[in-house]
Image (cartoon, rainbow over the protein chains, first blue to last red):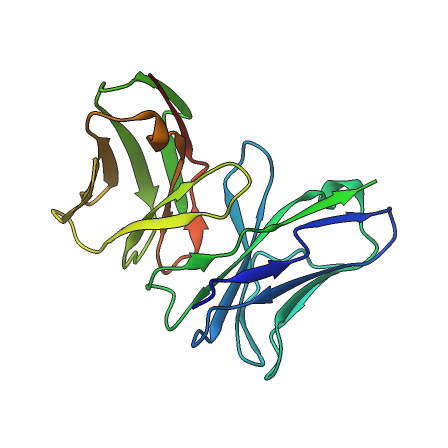
Length: 114
Length: 106
């Protein structure tokens, strides 16, 4: 049973380009969460999605960031017109049910903006 | 404002030297508190969920306890392989503390 799969593992973008981060949850999990982590900092919640629905996006920046979890396929975190401050590790987690259950994390995507 | 605070930020222990990590929280309506372990370059790995004051859970050299205001992660006779960052967070609030970076030296 594969765990949470994130790709790419590393992503390099120049300022102004778009970044697309993908997350395939564990089999049977219908809840996906995205977090951002800067060096020496904790995990910052960004968005919580169920299939085809955004449940909580209170941690998402108002501009340039969007997320989706379509009926088929992985969840996508999209960052438009990236800036250097977007450089961070982005982690995806999944759970089978409510947020009070444990989260299973992927290995993350390290985004570097040049 | 919901907040989770961990201390100390970093902890250096000699192998076999027991200690505790603290997680204090001010989260309204918290229904559970997580503990995770994170190794460099990897995603967090689940350790425990605690749901009510007085609850305790153990796993190998780790024991987590919970009161109404804080949680402790006790590490008994740690080994170098216990070196990692330990994160706590509110289960249904989706928030985490900044972690305690533990280093255990042989």
